[in-house]
Length: 195
Image (cartoon, rainbow, N blue to C red):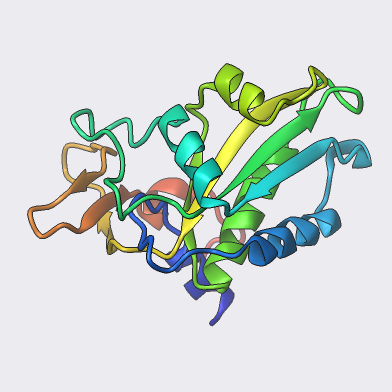
C-alpha cells in the first residue's frame, strides 16, 4: 500500500466487527513505534494504557462520546463496539502541555492501525474522572485522548464538499458513512513557482 492509499484508508471508524478482536500485542507494538516519533523539545511526555480485555473495553465504552454530528446516535451497538483501546496520557511531571505531540501520536497510531488491518476513532469527549478511576491513575497523569480500535464494519465514503459548504458527516440509508472533504483548490492557498 502506498502512503497515499494509507492516508485515504485512514478514516474515523465508529462501527467494528466484535467477532474479530484486536490483540494486546498489536496495540503494544503500535505504542512501541511511537518512541521514534518527533517530540516537542524532545520531552516525550506522553504515556499510554492499552487494553484489549473485553471486560475493560465494556467499562470504557460508556465513558466515551460518539459522533457529535449524529445527535440521535448513541454510538455503536453491541456487536459493533471497539475491541481495543489506547488511552493517551500526559505525564505532568515531564511537561505541563503536550505541545503538538498528541496530534503526531494520534495520526501515527491511526496510520499504524490501518496498516495492521484495523480502524479506529480518536475520541476527545471522555469522562476523564471515571476513566482515571477505572485505571486508578495517579494525579500526575492527565487523560488527553482515547483511541477506540477494531476491525472496521462500516464503509466510509469520502464526498466533495456540498454547494452549501456543510462539513457535517452523515450515515446514508445504505448504512455507509459519508464524510465531506474540502478540495485541494480550497486548502492550497499558494504554490510557488506558479505554472
